[in-house]
Amino acid sequence: MRAMVQTDFGGTEVVSLRQVPESVCGARDVVVEVAYCGLNRLDLLQRKGPGLIPGFSLPHVPGMDFAGTVVATGSSVTSIVPGDRVIADPTQGCGSCSRCSVGDRAYCVSPRVLGGNTPGALSEYVLASAESIVRVPEILPLAAAVTLPTAFATAWHAVHAVGALDAGETLVVHAAASPVSLAAIALAKRAGASVVAFAGSDAKLAAARAAGADLALRNDEPDLAKAVTAFTDGAGAALVLDHVGTDTWRTSLDCLGIRGRLVLLGNTSGDQVSFSLQEVFHRGLKLLGAGGYTSADFVAATAACFADGLHLPTAARFPLEDLADAWDVLGARDTIGKVVIAP
Image 1 (tube, helix red, strand yellow):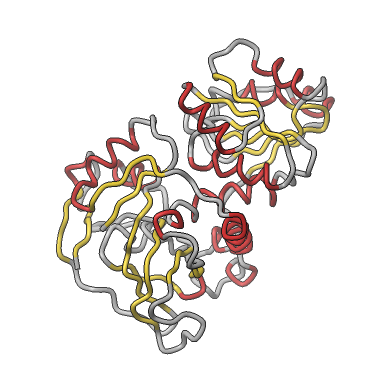
Image 2 (image 1 turned 45 degrees about the vertical axis):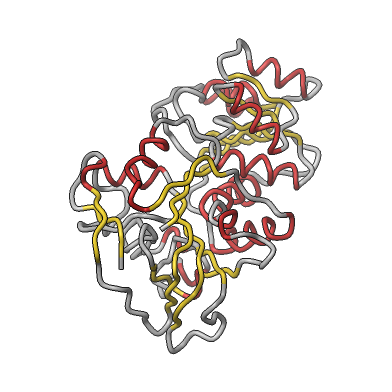
């Protein structure tokens, strides 16, 4: 089968289109013909250097998120049949350790991550564990379904499982046109919350409003926290999601009201910050880390999306052989929604 294969670390030149052996289906696995693969920033980071996910080795086929049609199932698989339209949780896990036994595959002792340390979906076919598979309703096109897995599961984990957002509360999101932030906006509005979104361009602000943001502000405007305070009639935000890090840390703290929660789920601008412990405990703030989502988060997030027709916009779509161009678009950080490959 055709697949994009990474053979070294560096730029787009280290990945090329090759013929590789077709996937062999184990007893608890399924083989899926890939219709679409959604790109993630992890793909870029692992192309540039090793060390992000234990067990990564070269040669490697990237690609975490996919949507497609099942073509084969293992001998022990009864819940999925050939012809099913599916997506999958890319965090596969070993299936037998103490973390996997409670549905916390993100902290598996021997993690298996599609496109992370096992062959991914930038190929014609992909092998996945049957327990990670979720059927896609016929009403939802696969081109829309491919935008769901990592973005919405991550957002659900941050907004609901960790952030415990309630109806009537106000959520603040940074980098509002990123996939995770757009997903968080949609999920927060679904839960009956208000949303204030920060982004770097008018086009990205428009995307945040389209996703449901009640107030959208340029992140270079002065005193964003003051605007949040005014929007909340002096209360401040109940919850802030921050996956930017150093550059937005101070603003995140300033936006929070008394007993507010700051959920940290990334550090694209850096991970070194300073703050006053006294400020945190006097204001009753909660600083919460949102690591990998759980299996329950993935199921809940996809169910919510299926029920309400939620999905992300597609920023651009490329054929498999034009992966280098797709990565350039993703790396420019100017996209709104997901960059998608159609093998």
